Amino acid sequence: MPTLSTDIRSHFPIFAWHSREKKPFYYLDNAATTLKPLTVIDTVRDYYSKYSSNIHRGLYPIAVKASNAYEDARTKVQHFLNAAHPEEIVFTSGSTASLNLLASSWAGHMLQEGDEILLSPMEHHANLVPWQQISAQKNLHLRFLPLDAEGNLQLDQLDSFDSSSIKLISIVHISNTLGHINDIGTIIGWAKKRDIRVIVDAAQSVTLYPLDVQKLDMDFLVCSGHKMFGPTGIGILYGKKEWLQAMPPYLSGGDMIKKVGLYESTFADPPHKFEAGTPPIAEAIGLGAAIDFLNYLDRPALLNELDQLTTYAMEQLRSVPDLEILGKAPKRSHIISFTMNGIHPHDIATFLAQDGIAIRAGHHCTQPLMEHFGIGASARASLSIYNTAEEIDALAGALQQIQSFFNS
Image (cartoon, rainbow, N blue to C red):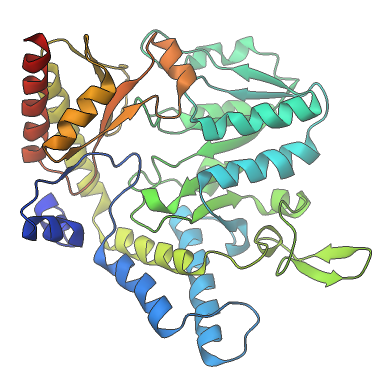
């Protein structure tokens, strides 16, 4: 069972390709998407090359195999999240699609004029804009948990809200910009005492941080396959069975119906009620392979090593003159956003790219959070299980050179 990043890297063919090409390659943009292990690549290729077919209707052998592989992937997700039933797992195209589904289908039909939705200023736009849209349509009201100066949620302010009007809380577990780990247990506990539903955006956390949806008693969870070593175009929506049954469909068409007449139709039970048309078959099967890969790893050991590497990265970045790391939190993950005085983040990213160092620059789909810190953008380095101290040294050294260049 591999634990060291040097062992892990052998599972990701992209490193070997860049090595053969003799190109520098330091991938530090894992909050945007993770790299893909060979087992996921092979699984997707096997589907397309050996049993490519549509699912749920064909009776010939490869269609049956594809259908079984697709539903097996759903069961793997169920066990990974410890959901009570496989039908509580809905496949979507990603976290964004899952949140839009919930805004339209749950909030759009369960909430009434004047009801309130509680969010935070650190949410990804995918967990903000859909709620703005449905609030405008239904005359709902958005409320926001305040942040302190360092970007931490002020959970002690929860009791200052009139909870009688709040019907939903949608909150990120790990900030995709700051890396702060929010105390979702406290938030869910507060909500449950007041009969408030909770959605958890786990896009940045589900890979290495175990999330037991039953133990935490969350109503909904969303995440994206491509951030957990799986393919793009596949996402997960977990929802308690009672809520999925009560929600109307989001998209209509084939494979989500029981009976269709000329003037009316009846719909399938969850999860198929929410999976209209031809679903992302190869992507779902590839996600199943990614979960197998994660289950194969010693994730607690890897998380411990990644915590140590992040501490080292913070120390090295703080040694760069005029570099400021955004946010300070009691618990943080492996995402580090920073600014350099007088140097635009896009310039930083461009100069680093010339050295083969991949980071992200911009507002990271968190413009309200940027406004909270009084900036328009930041640079972001985000680490994963295959990153090394040598890559951190390369980043810090390149940032030193950038600083010298602009100062000169």
